[in-house]
Image 1 (tube, one colour):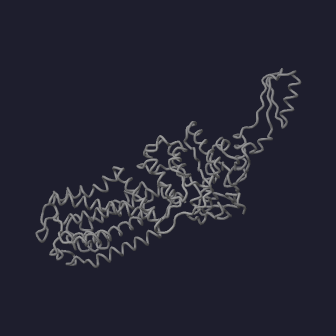
Image 2 (tube, each protein chain N blue to C red):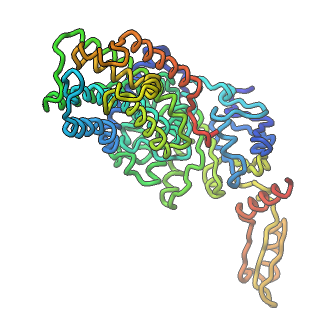
Length: 275
Length: 285
């Protein structure tokens, strides 16, 4: 047998290459599992179809509710494929020993996380296109025509994905077993959706609940998307009578940093039962 | 340490609170050897192997695996060590070829995925999804992932648990081929006949201690243990326990003037010896 003197690939380029391969594999795996496609990608679409056809009233500023709801459902979709998907999926992978198996190979650890980022970004892009295409086709939303609104759309998406993904990785350590992961993570996401002004106008929440909601990233992602799809005059109806782009960016970045610190401190390749 | 030792363990201890999982274990595995760690469930086999694999920290003792303390595994070291874990059913949605080809990318000098698929007997299943494989086929995929990186040392943790006899025979062939290619193999098993079929040497673990290390043929003094000679005498069935069975048979042959009616010469089976060793080991505690 040839004894290998070869050393393993090193450095960010090698990690990125392996991470890209992992990402492609993860996307492939995702699309082959019907449940993940239905519950992750299709769920926000179902929400969009139901809510925008049932709730047809106007909100202040003579804006149809659906125009308000589309940014909210975009935020739900983004948070779903970043936070929920990663928290549940990594928890299951840890419980099944997939992470343990990877730990036993010379795979650069960074490649695992890069692969997850590739997967999440692919899903976010697909989900956003899907939701906007359906909403626009049904006349539920008017797509903005000036480019700087799309710039806002992109940076809110990037910052929101970073915060959601890093929090998802950190939260993957919370469920005790892979089996209990969906039941642990899904209610958290649902409660956040209600506190973040997705299903009704945020300022209709009691003041103290608005303060609670404002602590979490989903509220800010939804608000960022509203600034893309609602007329600037609506900014007056927001809690601070402004889109608060500066604060929004700051809060998402803080959550991303917090998630990163938590994730690096709590991430384990093995389940508790595996020592 | 010399280069012909793949694994060297001295005084290995692992405790969980008051529970002693491994209590002062010594072990040497030579390069190119197939070594079987044999012992009942809970004897400390898996704990020991997981420490050697770099998965678990130890409480005390010296451990060197391929020249490195596995307490601090490096990626270069990982590339030289293959691990076949107890399987859990992963990658259900990916095909055999996709999974194996992907894992090959992690290693600096991997085997050819197509050759590995062929070698583990999954050629007919290369495009089948992992989720559709039978238990035995799953295990072959696990082995494929363990050897794809062309490891110098391969860990196999209870590789054939749940196999039917035919699958087990085929699997043993695979392990023998890897061993013949020069791969050092450390396998754990609670099947005695598996150790006998595969290993150059066997170490018996009981209660976290190594009770004996020997070749399968000499384990527990088997080669020299008292042999039972039996025959049909004039007064009925007779038997005699002796350390010199050949002389006994010659004597009987002379008495009967040639053929001895109903002659049997029985050495204790490995199973008998193993069970008496395990029971003695339990008595020590």
